[in-house]
Length: 305
Ligand code: HEM
Image (cartoon, rainbow, N blue to C red; front, side):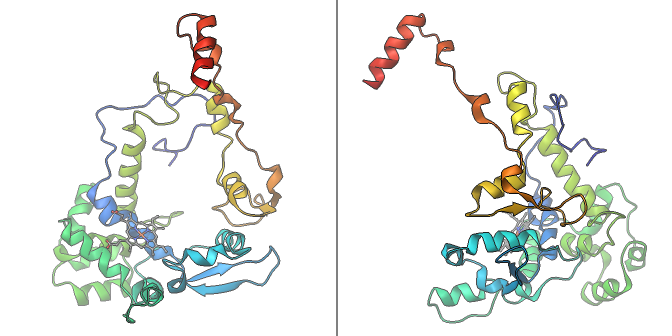
């Protein structure tokens, strides 16, 4: 993130907009690479009634297409508390059965349709890559600048034995391996949850989304640029403040929501979390000159009256 300058700035404008880069979403990103996150989803959703309460767990199949649960008193806050206190699963080629065998199973029943078996998200992902015409894993490794793979033995350097056994049992040749299967089977890089191919393809997308975006919020290009004061206020926004402001009655939160509670990330009161002050966006009608200052006021009165 730091090397590619993907971190938000703490102050000032970001001046690396590049009009020759396309911020479009790449086919590989939507049909395979960014779906890696399906592997880190836990099968049970945690609900926490209070910070010291005993957690309750609900199978994911019961929650998909079921927002009605959240309408019950206290349920929204229990869900948010539970989600903030849940760690991700390992990013690997293994998935919860809730997504592999039971996806949307209960929602069909709720719609009073005859009971069907659930869907398999992993098969859908692999199939989606194929019907979008994605070349195989071997192609994408080369695309990322890695050495061309000649056979299954070449996979040993970056895949574990158990994974390799499965891959060899399913695919006839190394060129047949789907991008989704191959990329998720790589051992993650040190300090990361992604292997080399996913790191390459996902960072390519994020670089283009930022560098190729003429409206990037930190741009200094007029007329789209925010004022320095507006930017200062935007930088006070955090996921913690958004959750506090939108929950029903959440009293405390960890400031770094996506990180575990602990030293350096202890509960603080929602009222103590910094928030942006929106007065930096207040219009000063005296500056909107239609003819002169006097007529401006009269025109507005006419419209209102
Ligand atoms: C409970 C959580 C989730 C469920 C049940 C879910 C389910 C799905 C389903 C059913 C599809 C369409 C599959 C197809 O027919 O091609 C899909 C697509 C996708 N998912 Fe997920 N997903 C979840 C979470 C996530 C997360 C956390 C990420 C990434 C951070 C993600 C990334 C994607 C992407 C990039 C697509 C393709 C979107 C597109 O091209 O329009 N999903 N997901």
